[in-house]
Length: 113
Ligand SMILES: [Zn+2]
Image (cartoon, rainbow, N blue to C red):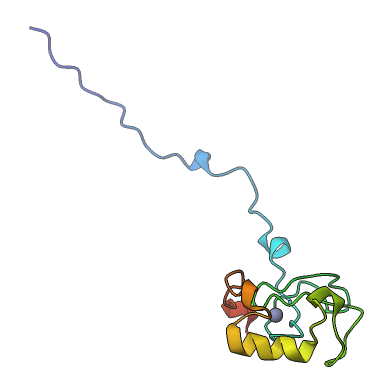
């Protein structure tokens, strides 16, 4: 009769198995300092408004217009809409244009003004 073999070497976790890679630099992917959107006011801009060329705010979908900073200046980037109208539309629909409501997302906690 052949005796049953016993498995003597149980697998065990080794400290040598720790990840050799450094932690990813999340701070660079998601900058801690953000700048407020001129339309909805949430901190969605990765750079100051003057530098955010054609940046589209993910919360209100206002397209940043570095050439028309005035409240009542029609913005070419936003089909002639003024910043004031954009704000009113965002309050009404949750986006600057009705057809963009489904694209816009709610602001994240870290984006609150
Ligand atoms: Zn916005």
